[in-house]
Image (cartoon, rainbow, N blue to C red; front, side, top):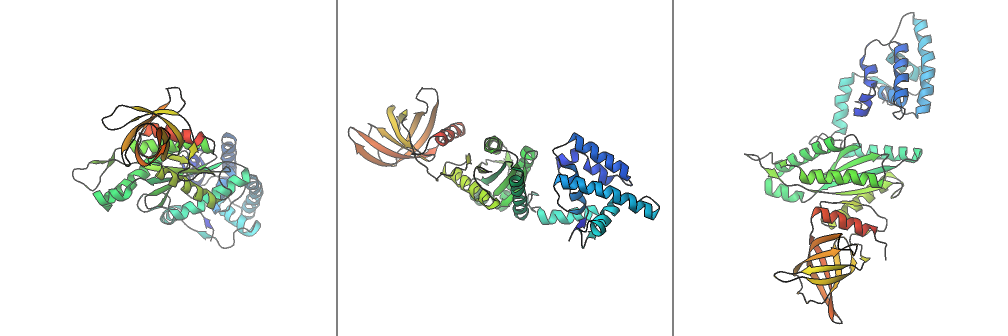
Length: 397
């Protein structure tokens, strides 16, 4: 049922002044026309006429069609006032135009703006975090995907998952967990509200729709958010005195048109990228790759050093790597399940070195040395980002 009102504009729409038109009483047609024209001239990418009609009627038009409707509406309004013999509010003639002239409204309902907004918020907002809810996310991702396809634009999706959230609930209680989710939501609003729309995806997961932004740029946005979360002082709201809780998050990214062709596949592939991030040590951002597997293993030969407990370092040479493990050649005999420190010279120039703690999971003799398989158990954030980017840059095979 169409509604004669308008939705609460976002910050960008507030900046271009549409609310001034709606909230100023008794504006004449000429005043509205002049205001819309000046806004359209100053903000050519904001589709002023399309948003104007959508806020009033919830009817969707392309900008060119909305401009045509405005021109037709102006003539209709002038005739309407002439027949009545006195000035009339443009919102009333808008209703009449779309019922009697254009006939796109068949059963409208008139409702006070604040009442409608309150009802709308209950339908589309998550009670706990005040972010948009999953239902609204599904609607918006379909709309943004259709818009990206129609206009041949880019679209990116970030899915965020709080690491080890079950442990937070188990250690501090569910009320503390709820408080963390609220604080995450506030952090997301402050960090990315100007770049995309944030949603409570479900449980400890969130989503961010980023229109008109490609994969590399959205990676920078996501990586910044990941760092902000890991650096933020989260407070246990359920304790007295309140104390800090360390929180990190893993993030997965998929983008149109590189990774998908519809709204379902961009969600599926962003989720796969998130799964890859979780399996690669957490507290990182992973981009979806069509050929990715959770432990994609790529041939790589670089020099490095191995240091075991209370022992001097020895040289190693990698055979292949994945984001979660390393297969390498070493002359030293090491017991299964031992933990060693590996320093890998990624560029073979003694400059681009990353350090990781690894657990030996298998060992096979090879001539005068041993071939080891090891899983990465700990790596600092900076080296993790560098190592993942390096693995992503390697050719398959």
